[in-house]
Structure formats: structure tokens, C-alpha cells
Length: 433
Image 1 (cartoon, one colour):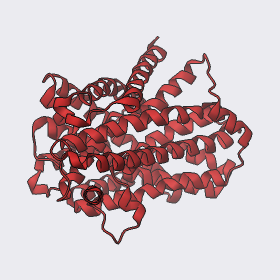
Image 2: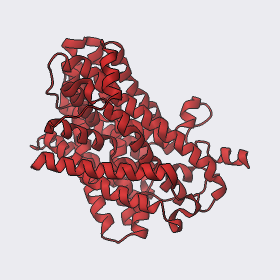
Image 3: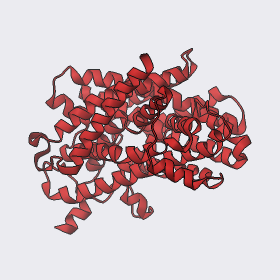
Image 4: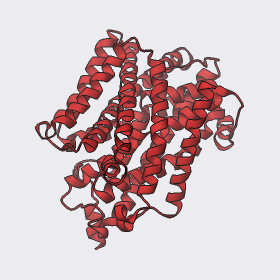
């Protein structure tokens, strides 16, 4: 039986010719890496530049919260065989899901626009040329890969793209870091009455705990399950539960840990360079890369800029895909990246539409920085009710059968929900009062 469980949880989308690491890790590592998108890089860069090492404790604090809520998301998909939106549609009042999906779609498309803009700016900084053309090319590349590439190959590419985040470990290695200050800032929380400080803390939490990540990871667990002949939803195959939950836990904790370490590396890099040099007004990831050049040198600048491009190529499919999964499940469409385009026309049309609207955001008169702020606000607002319903969902035996979430994972999940609700309230108070 133990062998059967282990075999049933082999990664169905990466063959034995791939490195063992890629065969073990799945939706969790992709989700964690996508969390460090160009917009997130901008948030972490701004935090490090403005507050130095004193803000790094937020990464230690947020890691268990984001890991717990993402594990819960994955367990919903793996247990029920359906994404979060389908479960919301099935078990909760019908007015809730359309509101959540609409807000999610708006926030994701704005985020796509911001990420495309950052990627275009990064290429422009590296080689010059027409930034607008780069934006369009990146959007076309992302949409075409999702729509036309075989699912197994596409997921493999996404996993390889996670290695682009190692660029930010490279920048840490080439800057001078006062490790005593870093250790104090990381292990000893520092608080301030400054409104900007709390706004930044809220932004960090909103960046690390985002609803599009919930929908994506749950849906990818469903995709992986359907691609494997040996896997079944855990409600129908409880004998697979032990192996499945063990795999999900390690996949998620490694993925979220990787995400948090990358965010910490970005904060440390900008704290040790930009903050020390007095360059505290950083609004975008491209500005952070450009500001690094005269302070940390050409190598750090180049690595930082290349990281923006790599993370963008990883994050845009997750943003567009999560919107398509949510809308498709809400509308009862045939969905899934494993389907051919003609088998899921509306699903793939949603991916294309989200990417196209992202392009239009870049070419509109909308201030991209303000647009990104409102995207974070919407994400924060949406995340709270989604997290509440996820926690309630995972406690119901009629949904999860014997795999209800209990004990420490349940407590940390509720703590993450409370913290996120407080963060949203704090964001509103600091922004409008």
C-alpha cells in the first residue's frame, strides 16, 4: 500500500529524464516563485530602500502564514478534485462568487499590465530599444505558450523559470552587507508610528498573500490529478491521502520558503545599497535596478534586471491563468491548460483577454503606480472573504470527508485570515484617513 501511495503521487507532468528536484516539486514551487513577480519586486525594493534592514522581520513573520494558506488551497483542490471557484459555486450563496471573480479579474489584469511594463522597462535598460514593442512581445509570448503548448511541456518550462529567481541571491553576493544589522532587523521586530511604515507592512502582506495564488495552486492540483491515471480526488480515494498531503506540504513549504528567501534577498540588496545611499524613493522594480547601477555596479544591475524579466515570464501566466480558472469554474466552462484550445475556447479566450487588457493598461493614460496600488487594495479586499470561506470549507466533512483541516494548520490558517483582515483595515485607515 505504501508503494501504491508513493506511485500515485509521482509528478505526472515531468518525466524521469528531468532533474529529481523538478519531479518532486509541483504547483507549490511555481506558485511561490510567481509570488515574486515584478510588482512584488517593486514592493520589496521599496521596503528595503525606505526602511533598510528594520523591515526584514516581515519575511520571517509572513512565511508560516502564506505557507499555511497555500497548503490549504492545494488541499482543497487535491481533496475535492475541483478548484476553489467550483467549491464556492457549489456550497455557498450564488451572489458571492461573481463578485469575487469580477474583483479578481480586475486586480489580475492590472497586475499583468504592471508586470509587462516592468519587463519592458528592464529590457530597455539592458539593451535599449522600443519598450512598447517589448511589452507586446512578452504578452504574445506568454499567451501563446499557455494556449498552444502541451500542458506537460508548459509546466516544465514554468518550473525551469523558477530558477530565474536565483538572480537575486546573486545580487546579495556582490554587495556589502552588515550582517549584525541584518540579523537584528530580521529577528527583532521594529515598529514605527509612521504611516508609511504601516502602509509598507500592509503592502508586503498583500504581496505575499494574494487570492490569485489561492485559485492557481488549487486548480493546478486538479490539473495534475487529471493528468495522472493513478491519482483520484481524495474524497474518492482516501487511501491516497497520506502520500498526497505529505507531498503537498513539502511542495508548498519549499515553494513558499523559496519565495520568502527571494523577497528577503531583494530587501537586503536594496537596504544595503539604496537605503545606505539615501535613495529611498523607489516606485518600480525597474527603478530599483537602475538605481543599483551606480551604487552596486554593472553586474548587480544586470542580474537584478534579468531577474525582473524571468519572474515576469513566470508570473503573467499565473495571473492570467488564475483569472481564467476562476471565471471558467464560475461559468461552468470546460477548463484546463491540459485541454486543447478547441476544447476550452472560452477558457483560453479569457487568458488572451486578460493579457490583452494588461497591454491596454500599459498604453492607457492610467498612472501605473496608482493602478498597482488599487490592484493591491482589491487583492487585499478579495483575499479576506476568500480565506474565510476556505477555512470554513476545509472544516466541512461534506466537502473534505476525512481530510478536514485540523490542529496547527487550522490555527495558523485562521491567524493568517485575521492578520490579512487587520492588514486591509490598516490599509484603508492609512490611505484614506
